[in-house]
Length: 116
Length: 112
Image (cartoon, rainbow over all chains, first blue to last red; front, top):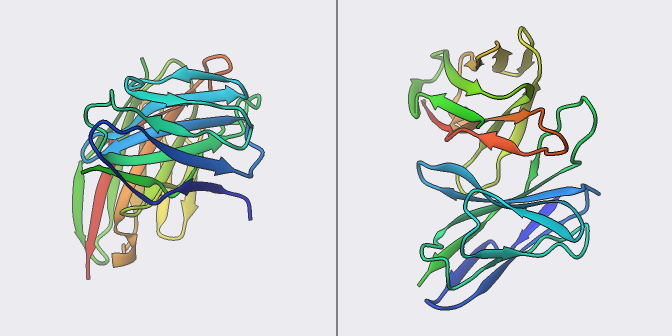
């Protein structure tokens, strides 16, 4: 079955550590996205990538980094510069631009990151 | 800047009590409006796409409608299993950019 796999489901980070969240898709989608979800704040865009080897900052990119070396993979690194990283992180993908057809996202199941 | 406002923030219904969730939006040319359902601790699941005013779509007890300024998600005779957070998102005509802008969601609780 095609879909998006995020791992791990739960992640604990010590102060000052960098951690990497994995996101893999087998939908052959061009575009991939990372969102952060906090209670009462909805989904906020961290980074997105429309094509391999290219990505753009979203609304809250500070303290995060990404890479897009393969079409299937879009890992997110939460660096020690991110002061409040405890949140639920969601990865999504879409076919990207496709003419006049509105294209929605397929989401992964999320990673809950907690600072300890 | 595209904006999506959902109301109310939370809604508590008795089983069988029909109601509507509102999504108001401002966008520079609407390409599509999306509704998602999200259960606690899980990723959002796609419900509907609407892309022109007057369009309606139905799925079981849910019906989504669209005007030029807002969308409604009508829930008819809800059941406890309909309890979830419902997210609305818009996609604009903006070149090659397929980004969605999300509202904060509406948390629905249906009591048996």
